[in-house]
Length: 277
Image 1 (cartoon, one colour):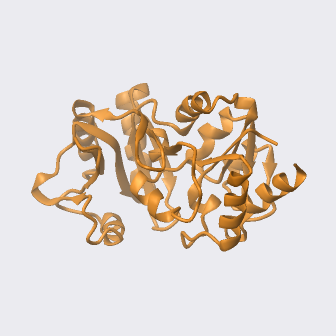
Image 2 (cartoon, rainbow, N blue to C red):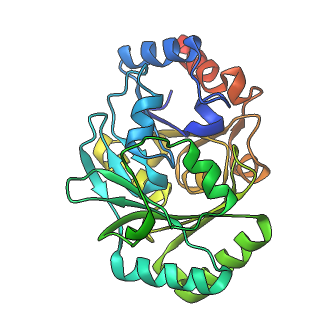
């Protein structure tokens, strides 16, 4: 058995409808009660995670926003890597010149509250996403669109061709001074191009979290399904893919589970580990 388990959320621990089964909640909470260290590594923000995982007993720090932030379940920030305003403004300028679009800006305000800043003119994918944030106080837009002093990430939503053109252009312009992630969105028919601090990968955060937890990489097990889990899979001691994972993740995995996220793959594996103890 590993000393530390870390799971992705979307299409890994969560069902496709973003729910958690009673079975998964029961297995997770029993494991924590037995002293097993469990946590999550996700592209989602603290606020989103807190809402989705309110039934889980989470006692260890969490990796959030693809690795930009490590925070505890109370929202206290333990580690943070943000894009400053100058480089964020440069990214936004190049993106507009390249494809004529502006990103959603996920920022951190002076009170450490998240903000989602959207441009005045939205494309169809941005409109669809923002419909899900109706009446969310974190959402800011209109004429006050601008990069923040602390930018957690810049998120473009485009079709496959435009997203590739943008990602290639940003990589050519900024090189290793930023982290770029391009992936198919599981819920909206578009591609995300997410721009982060160069140390904003889940793998970078995992190294820090292992020091916090006092465990070695070889004693860490990670679960995942998609592109933003590749860093975890190249660094952790044991890599486990759900059955619905993309091929790139399966190639890096030590174990490919016979179950999908909708079949409670992670809970079934954890229960087998608990029963073996």
